[in-house]
Image 1 (cartoon, rainbow, N blue to C red):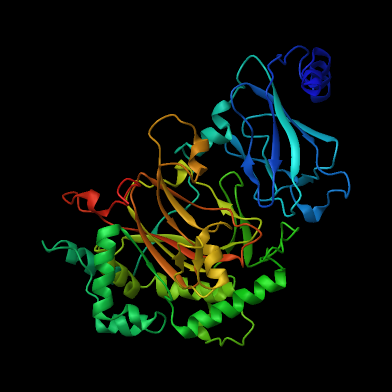
Image 2 (spheres, one colour; image 1 turned 135 degrees about the vertical axis):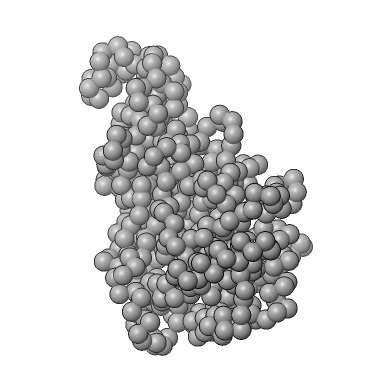
Length: 494
């Protein structure tokens, strides 16, 4: 109580006004503070702290004095540049300055909409990161509050979309054939031929190309609007990719509770950091940087090839092919895709994530198609009710538990005014589906215009990075069809 009374006293408020350059008397006597304890794995993603009349944010650190808190303990306050973008600012992908939570130190900054971007690095140690955090308030809400993080996450305005534009799915001849099929008065379905199966068999596990499995998958998708196909690629491709990403993770010394203290780890001319940090951070493979050259050479698992080259080849030659379009069109009963968009991503342990925001909402339904790679065997774990544990390989069980993040979560966009902070709450009752990370596993999810998704922050305890080829296919829904038959079930329906 003595500390609270001291830091909110008129004298100390005047001191804060002076050192922050605020007009004398602008801070009110409103008390707004709390004690925080961040334990191993705790973190806060990038935001600007703008809520109501907050004006100055402060943190008093009470971490252990002996031994001193060090970089390897994590928990740093991370500060971001505000980068001008049209009529507003966005944070960069990576912090430009960090502050160690040293015992008996105080950090503070002026709260400004769309400017005061900051986050808290994951705590890597078993010691608690203790602090007293609070705000000083003014009488009026700040100007340009529409640029605040929470408002921006719920905006569908120009510049908020992070996903790019759709590209034509196939050549003109294939597109014309698909259009002709749709106009013949029959159900729109691509013709999946034996030649298609032969082509796909060069990449895909042939168990997914038999008539029996195709019918089974199609039925499952029609019932649930999603399906997960484990061991998707054949052994040749899956072994090459596993060898490549294992080598890169080991070279970067990430995963398995070995957090990187370098925000630039893995970044090079082929892999670029993608932001803005209040919506996402991951590494994206730069297609055209040599990755698709595998079409001219067949790399073996012994060749030193960047995993991005393997994934780039698959994206260009498999996922963007007419044969694959006909395959997913038949499996999903949604017909040949009208177009696609997507990218190759790496989520590094202790660093990367995406956030659900209204800018990713689509005007039309899409078929999310994600091929995931990570540590483990990609097997389904069983649940032991007696021990309350998942049974399977250690890495598979860790990913499936969700304790280290890396899962992709689908949630409904709220129609009310609860606030955008609810859009990253995995306990929110708007959650529709959660897809855990799993080695060599393809997930197909029908996503309607009212559904958002995010990849949960990958913790430093994850067995590896999460690597994926993430595409959205633009699918045509007949206006006469009952759209409900393709919707993801709500929690009440599960």
